[in-house]
Structures are given as structure tokens and as C-alpha cells.
Amino acid sequence: MRTNSNTRISGSSVVLVPYKAIHVEKYHRWMESPYLRELTASEQLTLEEEYNMQQSWLEDEDKCTFIVLDHKIFTESDSEVEAMIGDTNLFLVDSENQKYAEGEIMIAEEAFRGQGRGWEAMLLMFRYGVENLGLTHYQVKIGLTNEPSIKMFKKMRFTETSRSDAFQEVTLEVEVDEDWKTWLTENTMSYTCLTHTECYE
View 1: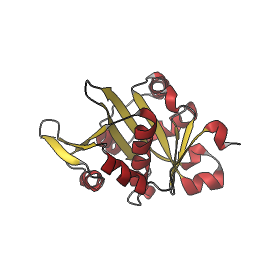
View 2: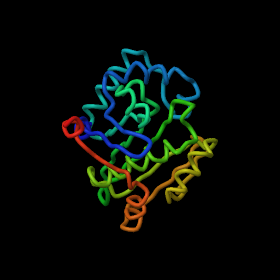
View 3: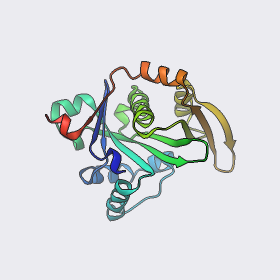
View 4: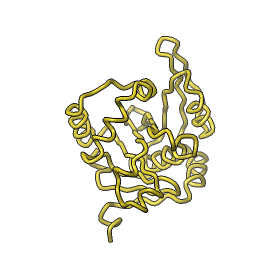
């Protein structure tokens, strides 16, 4: 979405940057993995289709996506492509009573899984959604066999609301009330949200 197209969010171990054309080739290589496609319920695209997808995500105001960078590699190399380790997304939905989003996180680089990168990246994204997009409710849909992700979101105070054997997935949700916002703030103490202009001043 255009809203986050010039935004950089920094935490202690990860940095979130908008999904841009320079990231597409590496992202495309990730998505050639059957494992990652299954994990994210994604279809295999050609490189040209991936470039078109990147552009459509930039234009679509219902989709917010950031590329996840490893903070240390990015600081040392100053290369977003070299530091890329995954991505995180919000799919926004407006209902009559609330503004909510479905969240996703993928740590594509295997060497960086199980180290808290996905945890921090998702919380940074949730905080951005609350403070900048006015979101009041979050939902995630996870494959029944993806036990680590299910445990992670339950640790984030999400509760299971439904389970589908047909789609082999579980749905978890959390209400963005004052108690959860306080918890979120306490767990993102290193959160810094800047425009790209501010980043390079």
C-alpha cells in the first residue's frame, strides 16, 4: 500500500522495509521452494508475475507488506537485498463494527528461523497496524501442522476461534483492547518507525 511505501520500522534484531522491485528476484527464489509455498498457501509464479504482484501490492490499499531484514546484516552491509530474511503482511478488512486485518509472517531463510526474528517482526507489524492504520482486531490462519506458529501466536495472546479440517487450518484472533496494546508496547520497546527521508538524514 502507498501508506507504508516510504516507511522503515526498526526493532532490536530486524528491520522492516517496504516490498520494492529490488527485492523481487530474491523473493522469487524463495517462493520456488515447495515448502514455503505450502507454508504460505502461495501459488508458484513466474518472475514476471512476481514483479506484477509486487506492483499490485504497492497500489492496493487493503494489503500492507514489509520485507524483513536482519538488523545486523543490514547495518554491516547497507544492502536490503543481502539482509532479506522474510516478509510480513497485513490484509485489511473493513467491517461494520471494526477495522481488522489478517496477519502473516514468513522467515524464508532457514538459518534465521527459531531465533525470535519472526516473533519480533510480527509484533512490529502489529504495532504499526494499531498506531498507523487504526486496526482494532487481528486474525491469523495457520496450517494445522504448523505447530511452532500456532504456539507463537498463542503466546501473543491470540485465542483459537475456529478449526477447519477441510482447509487444514486453524484461525486465531485477538482484540486490540487497552490491555493488549499495553502488552504490545511492552514487547516492542525497540520500536522505531521512520519515513525513508528521516532514515537518511
